[in-house]
Length: 524
Image (tube, rainbow, N blue to C red; front, side, top):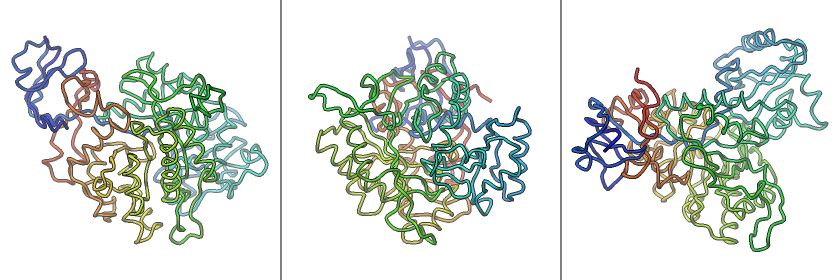
């Protein structure tokens, strides 16, 4: 007997052997069959979906759940265009703190909206003895006041209070970690937002690290969230590579560096598991720290690598030798060169074609780099919404020659490179449907077309958020398509993304989200 039969719907299965169905049966949390295989079977519950369109649950292959949850509850200056208005929000946050010496966090900082960077002197005017920390929306920088600068190690580089990359990490290290209880609550808030947008599985892009980690015991916070029933979707955890330590292991193991007890990709179950090793090679375009081979348009620098190339190569190779899947943050084309060189070296030393190594962002990929990506079997995990919301700015700092190479779509597919969709929430909007719309339109919010030759079809964009996402997370045997035997994770949509006008895709209503064959987001 079936637990549930869903009927009267258009099931877009993403399975080429049975691409469209009208009935789907669920038994013990898995897909039992489609159409005639289940139509006549008895079921405890039959749900009439009234002509809705059903897809596999969306997979967001690169998110920051804890950061998203905390940002939702943090005072924000997002959208403000006047410095005085931004400082007024900071002053209000200061007034709500209990005592001088407390830390005050403010979100939504982006110097581009304000016309200039805020400075330590600006913040000192409203700090009232508190330590002020305004995180840049990119996650790759922050601006702090003098009370924080005075606590930093001597020689920490900053520009009038703006700290980038590792200097930002030094400021973060001054603060106590978040508690596991607070982390679990933040994770739960972000998870509910994901479900509302049809996301049923995601990869958390870096726990425990200097740049994006929130606690040295952050994995335990995810376990706590699960124990407290705050984790209603599937989560795979990328571990920050700065947690690797030299180890003395048997020579035949060939493991120069590892996490404690040799922990690596694959530990866990269908709900919570350890995924890739997250390695940062450069910064971001928004903060102008992505590492390029030629300077930013109108600037006299080309961004920066997080370490010298030799150190980054050694880290990537050691992670590969230790058995990890690698998720390498590389936004600029210089960072991509370093990454590809290192992965090629690692695969020569110990071939692991099944590793499914990934480049996170792949924000600027030159034409000559595409064949190398394909040859190495590396997935490109892109964030389409970056160009939708930040594309006008990115295009201006890349210039006319390089702008068409940003956050590619068509070129990856034409070269046989897996194209994987993700959001990097909370850096950008997290809706997969709005991202799908951009992948087809290639238009920023202003209407500017950015790399229009990189546009893909609706079906290919949906593939990036289902089948390709599952492959990137080693979930291809259980998620990504509505195939009998796979887990019954589904998203019910009010309309078919293939049949509406492209400009309407992002506004399609998510009616219901199913995980393990059960609705987890009530209707209405």
